[in-house]
Image 1: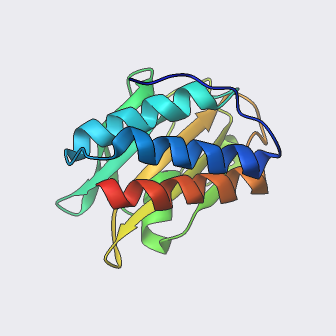
Image 2: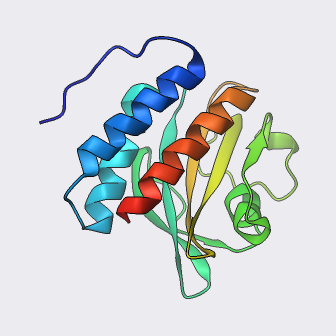
Amino acid sequence: MFTKINYEGSVLDQYNTLSKQLAALLDGETNKIANLSNASALLNQFLDNINWVGFYLMQNGELVLGPFQGLPACVRIPVGRGVCGTAVSKNETIVVEDVHAFPGHIACDSASNSEIVIPLTKDDEVIGVLDIDSPIKGRFSSEDQKGLELFVETLIKYI
């Protein structure tokens, strides 16, 4: 059973606790969709000032919508297009302070103003991305980036 907790300490301390909570939540479950669903739900309850959090998974050379929390979203994203596709092509985290200034940004939700995308890499292959949008410009700090990369590092063991 999931129990909501109060996260304490520095931002990175809170992300460490979140990653431990994720590991406990996913321990023993092998279904990738179930684990990604719970991971998106956990992030949705943990993060403030976001309007979308979820996953896109690689399928036949493009990103396809996976489990998420938020409004309906774009279903397919070509590698190299938008923030998600660019994160895949570079295999690196991309933080965008103002999505309207990002060349080729794909607007699924007009309320989104900033975004962070972290590749999901397993066995040296990008298998998808974690995508988080916020209605607030500049929402994602370097601490968020480090903490979310830790979250993905924990998650990848269960998918």
